Length: 473
Ligand code: CO
Image (cartoon, rainbow, N blue to C red):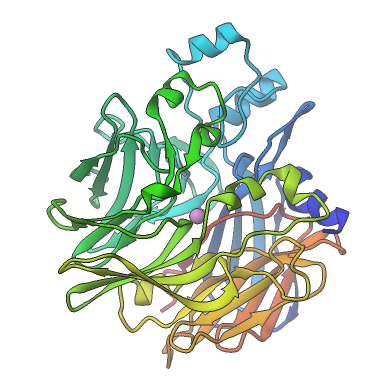
């Protein structure tokens, strides 16, 4: 990987900036009205200390507003206790995904009684019941104002925390927000719940897990929740004593396979548990029902090595070789039997995205977008955008030398004629130019429509959301 890439993608702290009107090359579609919100790390260093992993950095929100062919931009750090305390003390003070504060043995022993859970919600954006939430894998969600990007504060649900580890990928349907949370304890439990329009949390079903799995997402169909327990597992006692950074307490135990637990989405009742070969994933994509089968598309890896490849030391090394995530279709036979797996395409893909509003849980859903690796430059960080046609297995790509795109977000054209009639929005790091740009691609053929150049190189982020203008269709 060229050195500037690592520097700009993961190390150089981003500035809080605001630009009324970005310079645009090409033509922004006139119909594109609304706001793209993105979340991801904006700061990896505190004083002399550096976070260790891509999933550690302090959350920064980015906002792009589109109107009449123009684009504005603003970036602001999420105002969290974790960051304020680090800035005040000049050192990392809260435990994050793969970084612990330096602690003496005594302090470590005290930590088990007085563990401070980070509010550094840097993974995704939740938009639900008129609220905007920055989300992460601890059960703390931070509300923010989408206009100013000002932090409102940790959102307090009425009930007690339902667990310590959750997913940053809730599902939305019928006016509810669904999620899965793991409660660590003497008898650990995987719990499902839903939140209603008044932000009241209602528990659905739960099941025991003696050694809980690391889970970043889950599947949902019209009638079912699907929880996949990858064999990257933790002994809850290890987390209680917390002698290592969070993720380093987990071990890969492939002999367990990856059981799929299916729950009734409406009652929470555990319907059945199905065995599958061992695999690992961060992201479920679409899931739907076909007769007596559940179809679950997942970006799958043969093992959990991808987690260790995301350490900054590796990401900034010259000999980077990221394991390839592959879009894989899992078929769960509700009448009984093992889960079957079948790859949908050869292409490497991560940060998968579909037209969620239009086609989630839809058996007709066809196109999955994401970031991937260009075949001629496989030793770099994700360096292309990819579109997979799940029906044919064929792919379309966009790439440019020294450019590293983030998660593509689909925005539908008004009065569209097909699933891919719209644009993809992606924040692309131009490492050679030492800045990023917002790229607008035609979602049909991945041809460039326009780009808007940012005043800085933005650290590679994770997930975002597009919110249409109220007057737009
Ligand atoms: Co994710």
